Image 1 (cartoon, rainbow, N blue to C red):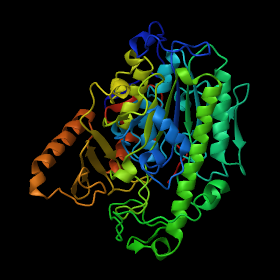
Image 2: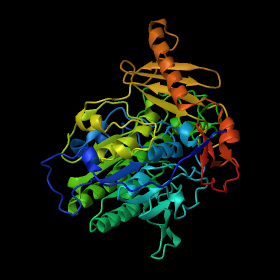
Image 3: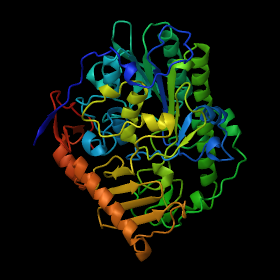
Image 4: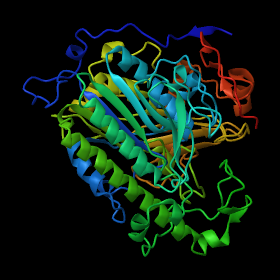
Length: 524
């Protein structure tokens, strides 16, 4: 197998970096010392749909802070998750690569340590890089990320953990003043609020420094479990009497291509449980979910206010997004890992000071595009690593003009977290159509979203759409060849790309090096 060597470090290149970017004359000077390089605050939720926010038209949502922020930011209306599941999305976010190149084909794998991430690039450009919250890039929920390569360049401050969604049983790992790692138990406190406080404390610290910074803040809500004791009581109180209708594309028959049987919402793989559809479980789930969304809106408001208090808002790029959405009975599905809109489309708000406010950008932005686009916004286009596969869309984000992709290519590499074949798919999503293909039986789906927003009518066998179907097939084939994506059963990746089943040693372009894969502790 061909060996690919990716350097984790880099040569510090700071002369004239911002001159290559998007600084404009006449911009108001920031109150703090750093006035040349923009800071970055990147905030992302977990399993947050794009359509459950007030600014997106949901009248039941209570998201005043995000609604206001959307008026000050660019709203990217066609943003999608390259693979709508936690760890694959994150591997792509940090590297600018597709899942076939990161090798993160399911959750609970140790990401290879040889990728050059956005944090490595920013470190070399003179930035302080901090991370707070969920990371989900190793093989065990309670496994920490030791100081060094395991933190993927977030070397200035670390208060992170891998996986936990019981918000009142939160915890994180950080370092003492001597650099020794220790665990902080937050049991009894609402985790997202505590992590937001840590982020605000970090902003207090970096605001005193004559050095630009980037901060990534990752919250666990509104990921399940969707129960009232997993969200603040005052947030749940706002939705306790709200009734939620089933979606127009509800299917009473569970989708046989879904990877999550058996589970609490279904009676085996045959039907929905009576208490889910006929009882109060659906209402409880939806009320809890909307309450969680309300809770993270409150926390996002704290971040925005803190930036203003510190005088950092005029020189800080602020991004809000999610790793994927949630199906909630649409298409006979729960959870994620599908190309349908409810799971694949994500909220994406980007605020760049002194730029367009309240604009809507309809470019087909995909997860691999986020890293190069952020670097472009920060004046670091020349520092984008050669191995990055996404596009720098900073010009179109800022101006609404410039080159943009024809479509987003999405990859469903397998089961959410298990080595089980039969759930693999690939999809193309452009501004009008979604085309998808399953591996196990070759089934194709084609939806015209301009006429069928709920993706109810499969047009793949409709002769009137034959040319559209053929064009999108060709787009998919070309993109897969470009990426070296061979569209294999997920166990093939286990057998060819993994070290001891749960540590990634290779991807579509060969083995990684020089750092060895982490020794896995996951056994099943």
